[in-house]
Image (cartoon, rainbow, N blue to C red):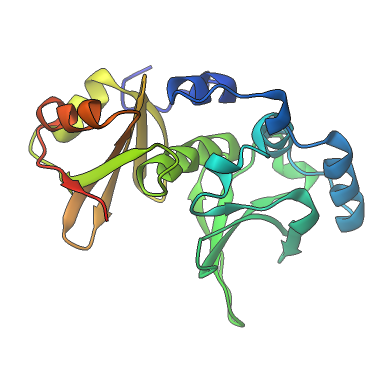
Length: 219
């Protein structure tokens, strides 16, 4: 596997541990809540989605700090897709195929809210999508206590690919982790920008040299 490939073998407990936040039993959603939601909607959620909720669906310091992973009671079905995540201002929503033919780890789609909705595929698998969005919650949503961003330098992408775990890609945004750090590389309004987060202020600013980027503190 090349360093540019996502690492699906990094399980959710390992990802949270990498980010300095060990999962606890109270982070798990009650299986009865998942079963009740599925019965109400007349479907079975994909295994990849169920596994996440049964491990970390209640880890709200990560799941609701910016974009909102919906509790199973608030899941809904739209155009045959199970909606489980809302953007923080509810401008867009994310859904996953829930037809049995879609398999255990199906693609994830995005749509805007409103009357005329179209769905666009943003990630090839639900597990990769969830892991990537958890990293985004760290770098942009303050799930980790210290965050900053800066325009990517000539060597930034190479440094990320060489020394970090590539967790996954969502809609061309690439997410990376290493112990105590998170990074997302995404095309922004002013160019290719890297958003980073860390457990401490000192280690955050040390990323400037490590990634070849001039960081600006997030407001």
